Amino acid sequence: MEESEEQSDDSPKRGNHETETFRLHMVTWNVATADPPDDVSSLLHLNSPKSPDLYVIGLQEVYSGPLRFVSDSVFDDPWSHLLMSTLAPRKYVKISSIRMQGLLLLFFSKLEHVPFIRDIRTTYTRTGLFGYWGNKGAVTVRLSFYGHMLCFLNCHLSAHMKYATARVNEFEYIMDTQTFECKQAPSVLDHRLVFWFGDLNFRIQDHGMHFVRSCINSHKYNLLWSNDQLMMMKKKVESLQEFEEGPLDFQPTYKFDLNSDTYDSSGKKRKPAWTDRILWRQRPEPALPSVDEDSNNGVKMTSALVKQIEEFTEYPLKIKQELYTSQMEYGISDHKPVIALFSLEMRKMHDTPLVCLRAVGDWSADIDSIILYSPQQPFPSSSWDWIGLYKVGFTSVSDYITYTWVKDNEAVFNDEHMQVFISKEEIPVRGGDCVLCYYSSTLQCIIGISEPFKVHESKVALEEGLMPEKLNGLDQIVADEFWK
Image (tube, rainbow, N blue to C red; front, side):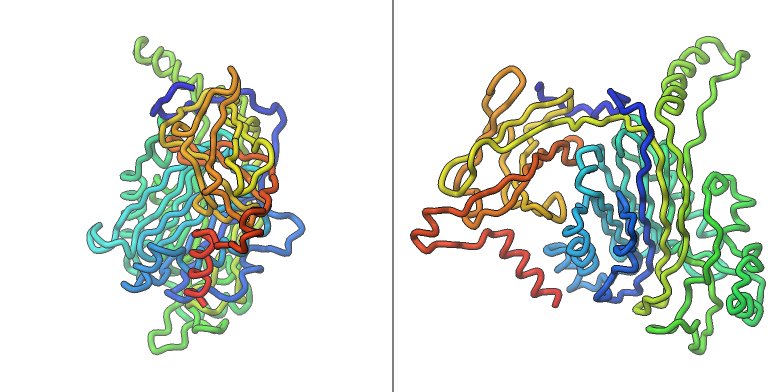
């Protein structure tokens, strides 16, 4: 495999001809600087008979005081820690995350999909204090899921009734300025599917408090829709019109007294509003240029567009919203969390991992060990690629026991396979059930996972009574104690 730093070619290759359906569970919640609740089972629908393939969780106003922000740069913040420790035993891995002050976006996937989530990129945009402060703005994760380009924007826009136009301006600024190092989808709207969600802060205008609360109490939410600022703006602003949203058949999620279902009873008595929203946009199917266009330019456009049209035809992507609701039982914030469940029906562009790898022979801390890997198709390898040893049930890409640089410890085994050596000093003496993961530095993702295998306890350590804890295990214990 020749070393290369070129962007991966995520064009269709040997995809499955059958369409498959994947379940996406999304959450948006302004947590108002509160620490997480003890139980997030209902937030994540953990008792549902149908488990999601993907979780995307966007939080706003995560506490970011100076001391906590410093500690969060060393350990996972309390919200990430809780969500990872809750989902990891159910074989979900945190694929990516990004934080900008109080804005936090987390992307989780079932382990089986991890090698097919590629070209992961993150970015952020500040809109607070004339673009210099990150208390408002957006954090974004984009990626390729079985070859389909997806983008997730978690936003926190300006507050207060009178700033509806400012909120739209902030949204358009975010969309215009966010770019990615990806040839197929360099901007947000180039993606096949975009999710825009968060505390968008749009309010219910004109209606008085008595009418609004009367409609809520009688569950006649539809009487408020015409005066919802986001719905009003969608009728006027072209950039919003391609975004879809399910019906607001749940009560407004802002503003509540803490630890109650009572709307704001303070002296301000803020009017209830659907500030917390989840919308989506499918990229429109491209059309061939008309025949009366300039012939030279028309040929170039047609060449580019034919490829896009073939992708839409050969690899369809359909989205259906299964649920859109609030989760009223949580009272730690003045906002209630909003949940959306989606079914994504698609044909995979890829159904083979880029790399296959396995552990060779018996593994323990008593002998050096061997990893055998083989590329299944060309990919942009790098001297910064590494193979990590993980415990079964690992929480994230960084939750490895140890790792080895591929190029530094590589030897040719035959024309199709490569050997990588890992020193016995790097292997945990306590052993356990483990997997190996090949991490591509260029694609910024795991592109191959081995079958689980057993690392045996060190006989030498047992005989000599030496059982030191591995470093990252000690770090986890410290983090656990830190957040108690």
